[in-house]
Length: 115
Image (cartoon, rainbow, N blue to C red; front, side, top):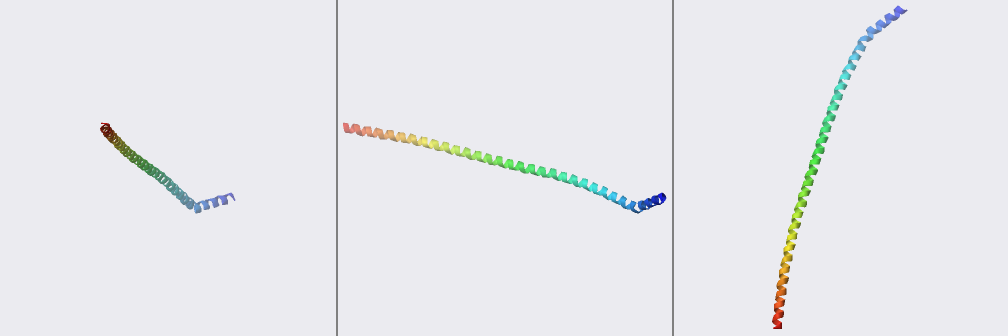
């Protein structure tokens, strides 16, 4: 019976050996494809990270530009306020001159009436 069992094992090896070998090769091929796929996913992840970094950089650049524009607007408004202040100051000077002229005229009228 041992001879018969050995013979049966040999027959099974012959019959299924080629199939098992093909199956082993398919697994090797699939393993290689998985390795390639893993590398592709890794590369894609790196590319996505670069894109996200670029987008973040653009947003930061846009925000900086908006802040610079806001700074220029504030500077412009400061200039306008300074010009307005000068106008008010000039107007106050004109009012003082006018008041002095009126006071002088009133004093002259008063002295004419006294005389």
